Amino acid sequence: MTEGSGSVVPFPIADTVADEVEEEAAPVLNPAERLHLAEAVRMAEAIVFASAEPVSEKQIGQRLPEGVDVPAAMAELQQIYARRGVNLVKVGDGWAFRTAGDLAFLMSRDSVQQKKLSRAALEVLAIIAYHQPVTRAEIEDIRGVETSKGTIDTLMETEWIRMRGRRRTPGRPVTYGTTDTFLDHFALEEIRDLPGMEELKGAGLLAARMPANFSMPTPPADPDELTEDEDPLTDVDLEELGLLTPKATDD
Image (tube, rainbow, N blue to C red; front, side):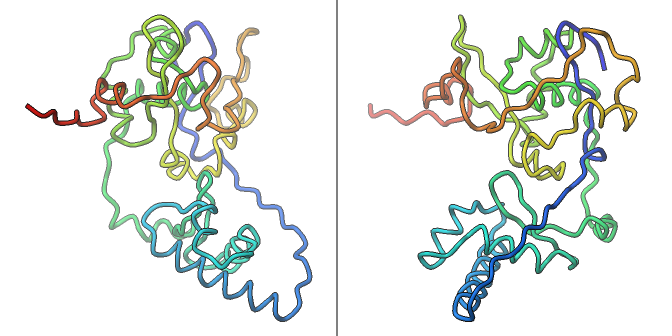
């Protein structure tokens, strides 16, 4: 990857992320509680199965009977599907069913062959993932070269990045961040599951010896939360950016 002023992170990351699941001792439930949980698990299974998008625990809880321990129900359901051909996985703050990783090859014949992203697009995606929220000017400062609008547009079309706000600086530039679709594609539960420096070195994506001033940024704990120097996008901003159809006016 091209070096510029600031820290630069190589990409891709898909093969460097390891899933670690810690098993906690399940609480002892009486027969009535067990039956209640089992029914909640069945209902949660139906809700997630019927949804085309990951479903958050809040959405699931709104549809389950009052008093149901949603995290416990999802943990139980995840355990049930752990050794099946379809697994229940956490995607951001939502849950979704996905083909088991070791059976992905069975889907290859039916998958759509997608064009690979350019080196520039991969660099920009990596910078946004690790440095978010970040503006186009900040991306160019890190890369050391100009970033074309087409590169940003391509990443927007994949739904891996999004416009998240405006920086409170002159010109109010747009800030960019990653999406749940990005997490889903790269099998990440949360943005902080991105590989660190040692993992990237072990995968051969970073040189063994790095410049003394090289640093790895820490992704935010909650990528959806605006920072102190960001303003949310308004309807006027969305219209200006072409993300919202202007309202019709009466003659």
